[in-house]
Amino acid sequence: MPTKKELEEEMRSVLEEECLCKDCPSYVKCGEMGGYCFQQVGKSKCIKKMRGCECGACSITKMEGLTGMYYCVKGAAKKGGAVRKAKPKAKKAVKTKAKPKGKTVKAKAKKKRK
Ligand code: SF4
Ligand code: SF4
Image (cartoon, rainbow, N blue to C red; front, side):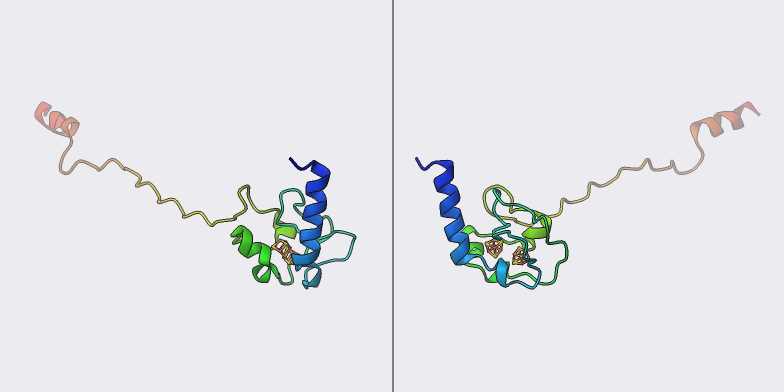
């Protein structure tokens, strides 16, 4: 089983070869290596503005089945590798009490008393 350090080195080399963040208009040079879609990396500490995203053209997007963008600002892809859009839940029908048609029992009783 690979050690944590080995995994980090492997991830670093994958990022250097595959990640397109450094060629992206949103990228800000501040010593970060990109790979913001990875849980181990997550949001950038220096990228704040979304000026375009290259993630769609990145091979890691295809390999991991990612559907998101702007991980540097929004945070890493969700566990399992994919950021899938959840279907909006159907709204529950709100039941309202229908007003009784015609006169109410109380009104009828009142009329009888007269
Ligand atoms: S995550 Fe997307 S927007 Fe952010 S630096 Fe990488 S390619 Fe650019
Ligand atoms: S999907 Fe985006 S953040 Fe992830 S490695 Fe590719 S370019 Fe970098």
